[in-house]
Image (cartoon, rainbow, N blue to C red):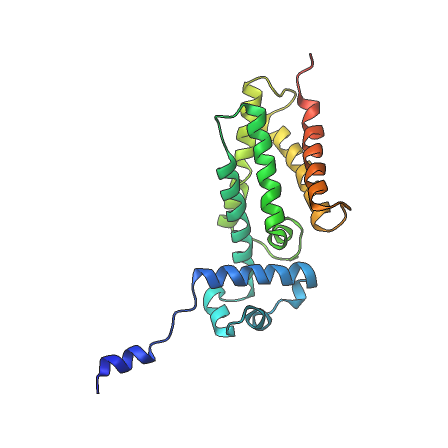
Length: 209
């Protein structure tokens, strides 16, 4: 009998991969934001994700590790979207608007992760210092875009950090209303409402003519 064949036939199939981890992160975020953090257990997640509890432990270690992975994945997606949307060939205000659109599109495409990242869906969870640094880095493209507007005299009246914080606050507020169903409009209308909010939020910083 060929022992090589026996070993090959008995070798386990590798299932603890990035695709499974991403799917479990999505499902975990859905459970937390729709049912609360108390509903999330590794056994519950394994069942919902169609895998074994051992696979969940292998990928994340424990519940805190899972929350950490959810936090990191959310900000990784946001950071990638903001980086992709940055285009210095546009005029400064158009480039700024493009970042605002990318921010909403990412939130709407990942609503459960977004609510975990910013909505306090997991009280008591504290991201690692490295994760906090990575999360804060997603704010940098907005600050840079505002600074470009200031340098071009298309915005005035504050520092790049001050204006960027104000714009982000408005953006986050409108998106949170949309994701929690409190912005009573259709999807297309919600996008229009968001664009209107972005326009109105930048108006105080436009130069007076």
